[in-house]
Every structure is written in C-alpha cells, then in structure tokens.
Length: 147
Image (cartoon, rainbow, N blue to C red; front, side, top):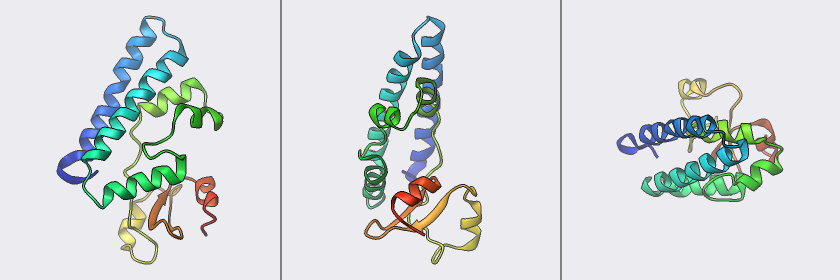
C-alpha cells in the first residue's frame, strides 16, 4: 500500500472518519451506533485500498491480517468485542490509521537504521511459513510463538 502515495491517501481517508463520528455524536447517536458505522466504513476503506496495493505486498497484507485477526480485511466488530474492546475504543481505533507494516524486514536482513525507526513496542520477526511480519504487540508475537 505504498506506491503512488497510496498509504498517504489511506491515512487521510481514515482520518476523515473522525468528522463523521463527531457529527453522529453531536446528534446524540449511541457509542455502539457510532462504533458500528465508523468501523464498517474503515473496513470498506481497508478493502478498497488493499485491492489497490500491488502484488506481492497485497498478498502479504492479506495474509498478515488473516493470521492475526482471522479475517483478511482486518479485525471485525466481533473480534474486537471478544478482545474486550469497548465501543469507545472501537470508535477511536477505527479513526486512527496506525503504522504502515514493515513487511520484509527482519533483524537479520534489515539495515540497522530502518530497525531503529520502528517504535520500541513493535517487534520485527520471521514467523515460520508466514514470510516476514511486523508484529504489533508482545501478545501478538507470542501468538505465533516467535522469539
């Protein structure tokens, strides 16, 4: 999702969801209604922009999302609620683009300066059979038993 400013356009589109969430809140919509609306729109954006991503990166993105969330587009409402996320958390996360995954980087083959650019709470590792993936948390890393 990096060619021709694609990631930048995706970030802008996700950030634009904030105004819809604020508008819904302003007319008294419930947190659940807002969460479901902005989350659905975020998933639609994710699907659209993933389809625009050239191969082989597109397949890597789909594979990673499926491996982590059980869904190639990303986390579903059901997944997030099962993880204990509140409606407010779902609203906030739907309107926040998050970092661009660093596919293909490993501690072995990435330049040291690139690894230092990654936030300290992120882990770069190679999961067996999954190519190289950018794990966003210790629990996610543990899920794949990667050390």
